[in-house]
Structure formats: structure tokens, C-alpha cells
Image (cartoon, rainbow, N blue to C red; front, side, top):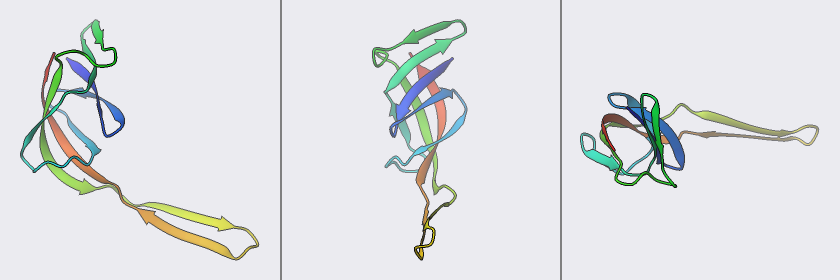
Amino acid sequence: MYAVIKTGGKQYKVVAGEKLKVEQIPADIGSEITLDQVLALGAGDTIKFGAPLVQGAKVLATVVAHGRHDKVKIFKMRRRKHYQKRQGHRQNYTELQIVSING
């Protein structure tokens, strides 16, 4: 069974037992959270779509770790104008272990 969930403005296809890095969620390491924004559920050939959410569907996940992604380098330049700007960005993430999908 799999589910399509929405968290942090993004959509993810999840299966029970997999690890997933999502936008940072304010939760303690080891705590169990419930993701209730389930857009679709699938099992074999059957797929259940929500409009926009599937009623009564939940995904249980455990917070494994918090961290930061690799640095993304931003470089801006205007040729012949003596303008160069360098900047970097590291986005925070929360790593989740999907425990179960209830639908």
C-alpha cells in the first residue's frame, strides 16, 4: 500500500517502512507524528483519490533526525559592469520513517 501525502508545500509518494526527507517539522527526535493531508491511496490496482483529501486517511511517521541539506551556491554577475555577488543557502530538513498507512 502506498499514499501520496502533502507536507511543506510539496507532495511525496510514501510506502510503509521507507525513510523520507521533508521540509523541517517542529517535532522532537523519536516522537511520532500524524500526517493527515493524504491526497491519494493506492493498493495494487485500486487507487482512491481525494477531493482534495481522502477522508479518514492518515500516515503515521516517526521523526528520525533533523539536519541541513548540502549548500546551494548562488552566483550573480553582470558582464562588463564590475558586479559579482556570491551567496549560499542550506535548507533545513526533517527525516521521517514511515510507520504505517491507515486508510
